[in-house]
Image (cartoon, rainbow, N blue to C red):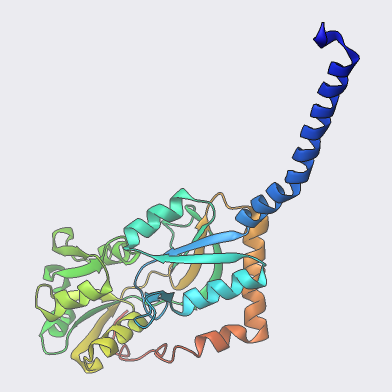
Length: 276
């Protein structure tokens, strides 16, 4: 029969050789695509200027933390894409993918949820009131527990807030810092939580004089006084080391300070009277 002929056997052998040749030819391309995918990160965050925000001129993510993450990835021969969402959604995305990073406060509660790259920048967490209100006097009298306060949903400051003596029933949540500020200005709450830099940026953007608000309390936890980049806890050790080394090199070269200088709002102001 035909299957038993020498011609058939030679034909089958040639087909096998052709198949193997094709596989070997495609292998470098497949390997290159795989390696390229491994070198791409996604950075997620929320509207938290001047660190992460949507540039109104371009509609794209911007901010000091965005610039720094891009510089770190470039130095590590990696690429990064950036997406901004409400913080709770950003947290979910961070937890779902080992190739995801986020700029955030490093806290005891988060310590084992992520790997850490940093520190990036000092962090302070304050409770603010309208300067025209009598909330400062109430706070000095120890009546803090009767005041209502708003905090952005999912922020590390929520845990800090619970340690101040404010009743749980008096804590409300906002989608982002912009909504938080609006609630205070509208008189819907007595106090808001805000980072001083973020609040300064918001006030300037809205044309609101800085003296409109007063910082009453510094509620920063001792274990949470620095911002870091958090990365998925299953991230590869080599990748974490590469990004950490890149950050360290950017500091040593002066590039870190040059990136920071693009955001002159990063100046601490208006918090001298805040009580720790």
